[in-house]
Length: 588
Image (cartoon, rainbow, N blue to C red):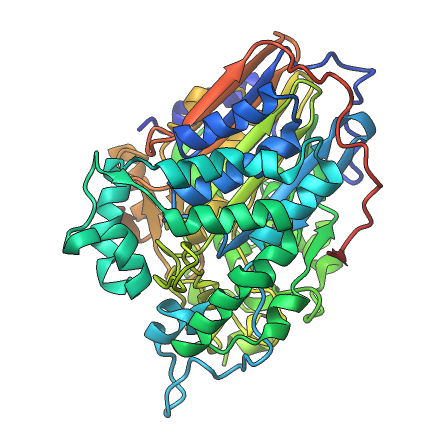
């Protein structure tokens, strides 16, 4: 993989980062031409095709996002599905509306802060990661219905038709999915084994995967919408299975689930307008903090070792704040004004020693309590009207909890592991947390999912990636690469590196650093660990207004596809002109 910013020639071509106190409004359609067509990038070619199919039928970007999300639930069951959740970042072009549809899972009513601890008060990883006890109440179905109803042009049944077809007719298993089935086989419930290990043999690459139960679930969902998933036959089967096999869900959990519409975090980096998700995603806060820290440091310097050192130290500090302060804003008073203030981030920047790495243990926590994957999926879409969607979806670990309620056909998530089972106890990604992210009924667990959009003088980028705790660092590096002029096909290839405060280690992909950079970072005191494999699966769509081109690129680390159709879809009217969306409120 190529090394990001090697030689830092970009420093000679572009100004250093600078943040405006108040971002300007995004460009309106009267100020810029419409895209010359439409583009979709997702983690699987068949899901990308589903989005293009809907756009060709006259749907808009929001319709396509529903179709792609549902198709990914069928063809990439390792990363997302009806039993999970996610964040859908939406931009509606005709009125410059930006919002986040928060379909994150929530803790069941009967959840307690100590539900995953043993008699000695220590976390039991098995409880929060495997089986239905590990599952939060799914949010993706409610989010898809909401997006289709409020923003879409086509009926839900039409949007789900490609996914239903893929589930019923089947599709060839790819090598990535075949390997994942073998890796997670021991975690599968009997209903899951019946689908992925028929006749006692795991499906192999090239075998046809048919998911009849999932097709039936999708049909009921297509006809009955939200009520047909959280109630009716699907809801009854899901609830019966969960309760029989050790879960604690109640019917009221399903009835009470609501998506939340949220205002995104928007800030300006030089002439670039960056739109990122708010809590319970930790990504938006981390982004603005890092950009402000780097702006204070006049990043990037001419020395590549020093540039990486500054980036790593910025990551260390924002992940420290993630652990100490962040949680569901409906349950926790997060001091956002302070965390995003220039005085605070300037102090963080000034605490970076250019001559040595700061051991994480030396950083004074701002919160007293701190003292005591490749899974997930992403899609990026721009339609011919300029509407766009960046969505990161998840069931957490590969195949989520490994549990499939009999007769439903989809895996339930294990997102309860994203809570802090105990202060400072690491989750599956090694992330720690404090009381801000402890388990409570109806609470949303903190997330690293960071779907985002960047709008600059000449165009727009829509991007995101899976990757657990590394999502934030991956999207940061990619965003900076876009701002500094990298082409989308080069952005997805860039070598990646990551620091998350604890453990106090810089994890980097093979080839991400030169030997001189490795030696230089170690001399500064950084502990380095080369990843055994490449990670992430970025999807990026770029509309270059100046060149009048569209690009859609899928990460070469995965099997996805980015495709562009250089013509307007049949429906050229401004789509999704539904009601204006209030910020941070629940919706059916």
